[in-house]
Amino acid sequence: CQIDLPPAPAGYEYRLTSKTRTALDATESAARLLESATFGVTRSELNDLGSSMATDGMSAVETRWVSDQMYEDTTPLTSHRAYWRRNMNMQYDSSHSGGTTDHPC
View 1 (cartoon, one colour):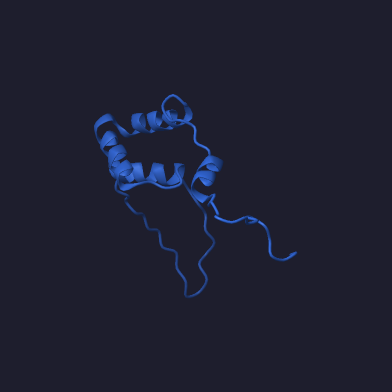
View 2: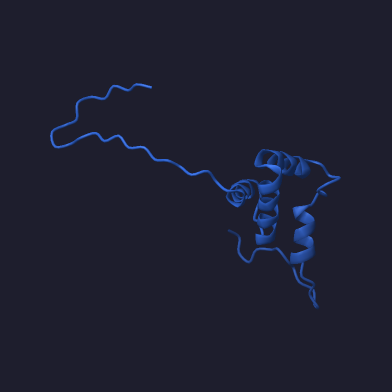
């Protein structure tokens, strides 16, 4: 790899630095996967996936986890609407117009 840089202006200099990055351990790899692929993760899910990665290999566990998310027989489909209705649809003792605005704008 080669790069040609213009001469540094007076009072400035170029510095070339490099960093050595340590490899992620299994729990850190699991955290990275779950952070990017879920809406949130529990500590137990992270520990379970991390320990699986430590014993079975990271690539195999990542592939299996993503595959499991795609197939309904391993991970049942869920509905945000069903979750919303179950947890947010409060029952009122009297009649009430829920979800209406109190002003025109």
